[in-house]
Image (cartoon, rainbow, N blue to C red; front, top):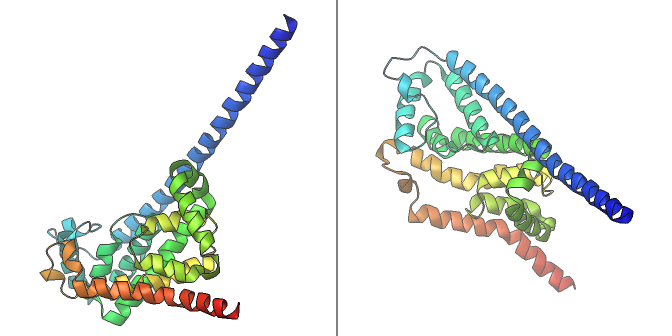
Length: 270
């Protein structure tokens, strides 16, 4: 009878330990989310302060100064910014720059329309440099946040998908730069997922940052070209033409050529 009681006590102890270890990851995940929310709130406050420093807008213009979520939003925002760009060039440029980085850093949709707006507001060389730089910086901040806080969140909410991509990264360990460029050009993985999971599964910062800067250039070229005729666009589908899709496919193929050449060379040497 005593032995039975002792056994039962052990079982209770084990259950308590299991219950405690189950609670611990949940608590740490909650803590990571709270810190992330705090950083997000500070960033929003910074953007709001920037908005208050913006030139005085006409009453009918204020409704259009918001994050563009469709082509109509982009058109209306483009009109407002174009009116103020000549007189407040650097203010508008800084607002564009920080807003783009903010969206990328927190994986918020809308940067595609900011890319289109760059083609409407600025000459092509500045627009492409601006979009690539903002994309690389924003993705880098997202990478940094995820490396510090995202590990627990990714493992809790995207375990299977992250594991699948981790296996792909291991396969391409010798040519990660080309692989990241290819992923940025193609739609196989969403950019927000790449940004969040990369540090968690061990993608180094160097190929991630430079692969992002180079890889976003071809899609950005398409967006910027669309922006030059912003007022003629009626929907997001108008952004892509058969020529632009063909160009993106060609660029994606070119990004893989160094990998193919390297494999062929290794086969010959062996």
